[in-house]
Image (cartoon, rainbow, N blue to C red; front, side, top):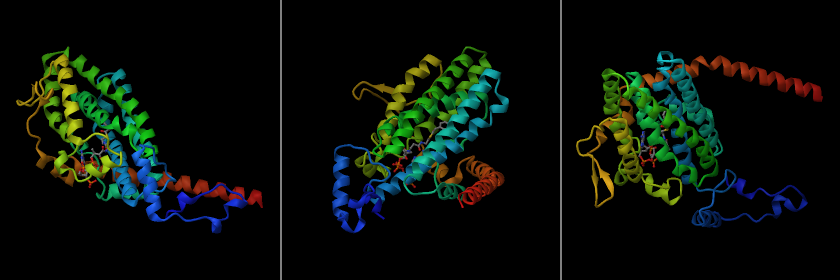
Length: 336
Ligand code: FAQ
């Protein structure tokens, strides 16, 4: 299984029998030294199994989150209040689909297939972000998802641009640029609503009240209860811990809420001069785990929608395969 590390240029000097096969411990030392120098790992490099599995887990869950994440906002495309808002929303939802595709491609470089990843999603074995299991009840939810959900996603994803695995890090650079536009369009849409009628202002405040705590939970469990963090940080997959990212998000969002004129629904939220950070109230982790484990308000609906999309698209995959087979047969005939 380690042969990808042994590839040499073609030529007489590259006869396989003449090659010395590095031992597992030599390969491990080479990998450790690379980690020490903070260099990128590429698909053909040797890597420990656990590193590969951790990346497949995280990148595929991230890809699933982008694809399932199209659903809550997609629900509003047909009901956007103006042509301008509809065009922005279509572009945003389409971007999320693109992010999912870059990420599935990055995960495929680790030796997993897209079919395997989708099977895991469709059978409920693979996770995706908890945040996409909540309903979008009003148009203000679309703005709040842009401001807070994309805002939290960027905070978590900027450090992933420096992830030790090259294909993931490079995919994240483009994704973060697009997420930044998503965050701004959401905030701008809310600014407009907050200059509107009392009913519009109340709609924004209600959406903030419903999404705030879910966004804080998006960063994952507290560091002390995060089984994967320590190893992922040693490997340079995660650069900043769940709690530190959550804190940065809160500190960045409080002044934005003030400009917007909304209240963040946490009576314990206040600036702590000694820590130079905001303190906040307790997050409901029972609710988070219940949602992650399939019992959130929209889990079943989200999964059913993805499974139906997969089944409805079977004829497209069959047609593409039939076409590819025909082309192949034609080329073989021409070559004969
Ligand atoms: N939801 O030990 P840790 C977006 C699981 S993209 C569900 O801390 P890790 C764009 C975790 O998987 C949003 N499960 O795990 C957009 C693990 O379970 P496992 C997605 C969660 O991996 C915006 C267990 O808990 N972003 O929003 C969650 O070190 C708008 C223990 O946790 C990414 O995926 C959760 N929130 O850290 C799209 C970013 N949190 O696998 C549309 C990449 C934790 O052992 C509209 N991922 N779990 O069975 C990451 O940065 C990390 O994977 C974390 C979790 C930070 C999410």
